[in-house]
Image 1 (cartoon, rainbow, N blue to C red):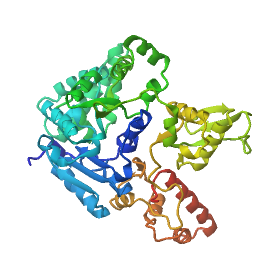
Image 2 (image 1 turned 90 degrees about the horizontal axis):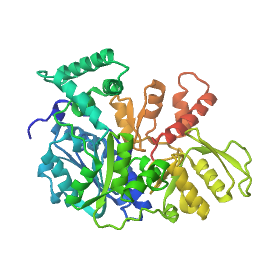
Image 3 (image 1 turned 45 degrees about the vertical axis):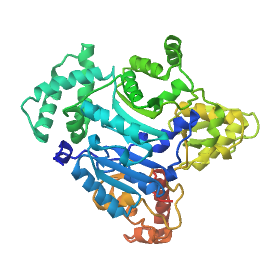
Image 4 (image 1 turned 90 degrees about the vertical axis):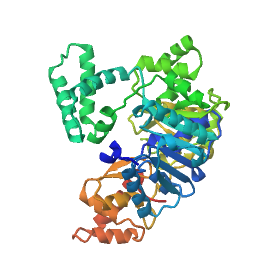
Length: 487
């Protein structure tokens, strides 16, 4: 295949939590739709790059089948080296053009298309939808991200100015230098008392803060096409797909417990979810969408029944500052959340549930194991929509308590060996590991050493073993919270 821009300049390959199948399945669960359990799911990523978003899935769920393809041969080759080094047998990475992809790929429960749709020509965008329409299972879910209007109008305005400045400049270094030159010129000379210029300056600073490789491909690439939600939804319907929800959390606040703004929009446009989200995009000048699609014709119950929470898992850093809280009577008890919020509760069943969730953190608790009471179901749902707790369709795929012979994620240890400082967690996130002592400690966690062995290894520099033993315990707890320990 001919060399692509992504062969010339590699795009950063990393996990994105918003694309994780557990995240995609959550709205399906709350809207009463069936979905595939992740432990045996079939997952496809279109435009997978080096596989940074799906290799962690293959590692965490050995019973799942993972497939990714990309046009950039260098990226696929790099991903295959990682797969081989990890000894993974449930993932395959292919060099393939979207225009050549079709039903022969197979049927998938989850299809991920992140950072592709707005950056490719129209025939390729149509190819994306065609592949989803051909390969998505009847109860499958697809994720597609894209630049959104109306918020992207200002970004388009800035892009047009930058692209004018870049006329005649070719290559990564020249275009990057030219872009920075113009952005700094605009920041230094555009008036602050003009609202439009002031807003554009915000985007200028954001572009300067971008990873140079991301800036080169996303903002300075040959295609940068935003869409209104209603346009995207209409295109999806052509291929037998319906807009289900957004992958990020803001949509819950309007569909599960509408704010005054959401209620005002409903009063004008009715209950159609596309219309609701479109008008909310108008009111918030939304820049980017991460939409979940399902097959047309599925019966979606958007009026959430609180009993559906019973099949989920709840997690959150919640604590009660009272050392002896009254959890069995109606006496008020104060609970504090990791984000800084606090509430006082009187309902015994809900108080007991929050105490259990806090004790299990960073692990999750099956809601079915909590008191079976409407106060619990509704309370957890409201706390989730407020951003205080997390709900998921399954438990976290990492150890929340260190074992006797702790083992760090093989992927994180491989990245450590390669000298990387941003490591992939089993929580599908990136964790910064810069300080040398922490890196040395993580390298020891290959599953062969007991905690005593770890203490002895860390005490070789002459430190007091008793002090080191305490540090080992704290280090292991911290790694567990970051999702870096294998179960």
